[in-house]
Image 1 (cartoon, rainbow, N blue to C red):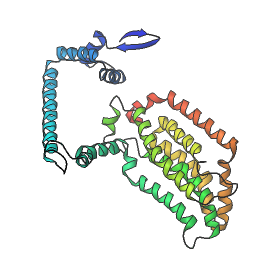
Image 2: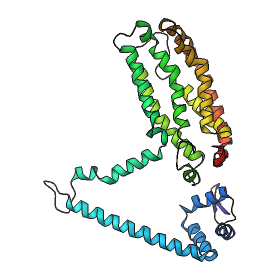
Image 3: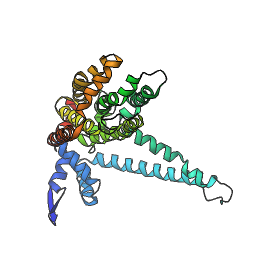
Image 4: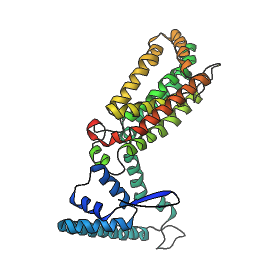
Length: 324
């Protein structure tokens, strides 16, 4: 690698020697990923690497030319097809060559793009986890306001939701990354955007769905004097999610998330739910101490920072597929 710098910001480029080793297949896998990621944005290094591959493996150059020609032909055909479809769509007040405004909004490309984004967000957002999240949120509101629910059940609804909320993202994280959940895991993890970057992206997607749903459900519940607020679970949930990721760098995402969830369930969730309805109010109130007060929230914040630092140190471990 060659390095140039300016203003204290170093930038590296692919040297002739590195390009030759890459073409020969002797570059370590992690370095090869870095090279592939770099040439996505650097035209000069891409040209240098392409020349090295063509020199070392002429058959690869012919294959690349064929792939390039096929891609260009497909793009041209798609543009011609899109132009033809746009010209065929007319509406009152539009000319024959101008597509209707509503037709553009309903274009198949937009639907396809949304589907791709949902697929890339991870298996958790396409499976039973999303349904379970909705059922928990709706069930908590139904418990508080449903016909026939006792006063004790209604009073315990918010604390019970709070003790369950932090472990729901863990289930989504366990289902988001790894060969057990994603049939294309080996392919996606081997790309320059794989590893911890893909894991964090899918974890963020899980949190982006669960945080609004659970917080809104908590806000819809009856207020209880002296009880934690609807957003009191956020720091505990974040800390547990980061703990699951950090532990997953040693034992795999599914095992790490499951271990953290089981520990929380054994210590907090099961005692609250195992009691009879009148006693569940007391158990839920007792569990609420894990969320109440600046000291508890500061402890969760400190735990989240520690787990985030450990995850940063262990980030390279997610490049090894055999441990996930």
